[in-house]
Length: 86
Image (cartoon, rainbow, N blue to C red; front, side, top):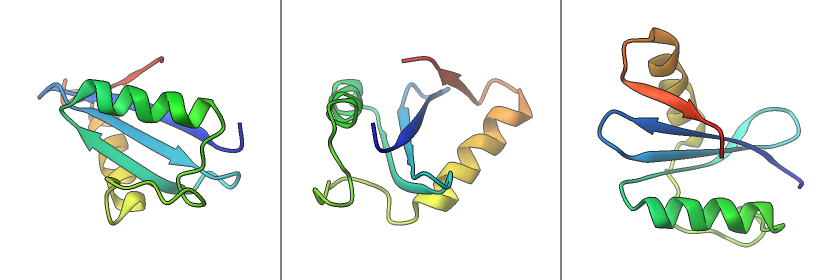
């Protein structure tokens, strides 16, 4: 796989998928309450899909900020979000 990823769940039940390039920069970020959509997007990534080259829609306009925010919530350890192992 060309990219790495992290996946999170927030306390509202939404899944967050962060896709990082080889430098660790978040290049695509999807947050949605439609769990099937997020899992299907993750499956496409694992199958070799490329969110940039393939022009994936639905991602957040500022993936870097979204990634920083979800990590801050996880790091706070107050139950706002957790990292998942999918």
